[in-house]
Image (cartoon, rainbow, N blue to C red; front, side, top):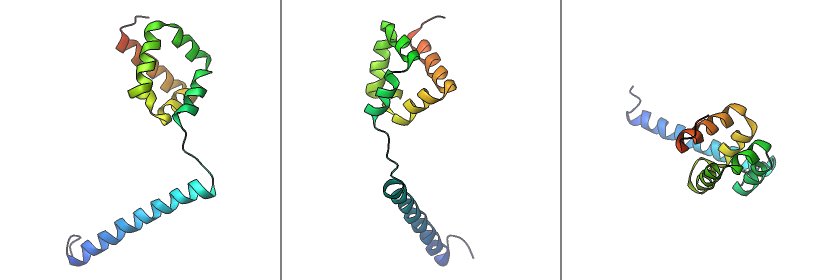
Length: 107
């Protein structure tokens, strides 16, 4: 019996519906039972603003302009990526190298 035969397609439909219902239930448990909320951009930008290495970055006028642009529609518009930059040195260094490359800044 093929997966795409009459019985196979019904089984595939049931499997997809089951996965979607399970994902929805997990979101409900995460949000209402464990009270885990999604980070807002304002919260993570505030956390980013107090980092000492960020203070060094925004002193450079070129970098400051790029950071402001990136907050509007770039990598810094994603709260999860901003949290990774704050918590993981490798991600931070990668973003710093990306900024230097984009701006043409030599070390």
